[in-house]
Every structure is written in structure tokens, then in C-alpha cells.
Length: 87
Image (cartoon, rainbow, N blue to C red; front, top):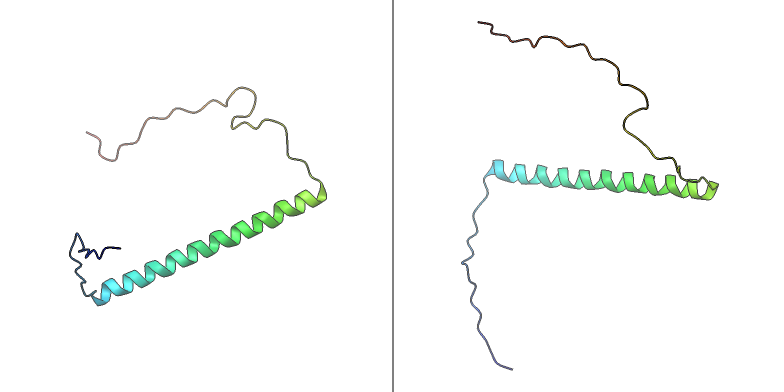
């Protein structure tokens, strides 16, 4: 086995954080932790909910869902756009 001395391609330079930057990094880390905790909690609730539905034997809906209800759309009232500065 050969001894190979590897040198880093880029010199590493460590800079001291200011007080404000340190606080900002800590708050950002806390925000990420809280967000991930909320997502984990919601996933646990979702898994529990669907597990209960499976145990109760509830079947998923087979009817195709639509964002638009059947029938004709309601007529919209057309109004003149309001401009704060009229010439």
C-alpha cells in the first residue's frame, strides 16, 4: 500500500460568528427541529387514523372526485376595477 499525502483542494478558513449570527443560527435550528417534530406528530396521527379505518373495515370511496360541482356555474357580477388614482 502506498503512502499518499492528500492536500485539500480548497484551504479551510474558519470565521468567528458575531453574536447576532450565532443567535440567528440557533433560532433557525430550533425552527427546523420544531417543524420536523410537527411533521412526525402529524404522520403518527395519520397512521393511527388509517389503521383504525382498516380495523373497522372501511373501504375507500370509489367515486371519482371533482373540483367543480355539476351543473351550470353561477353568474358573476362584473364590476369596474377600482383605481385609487384616477386621472
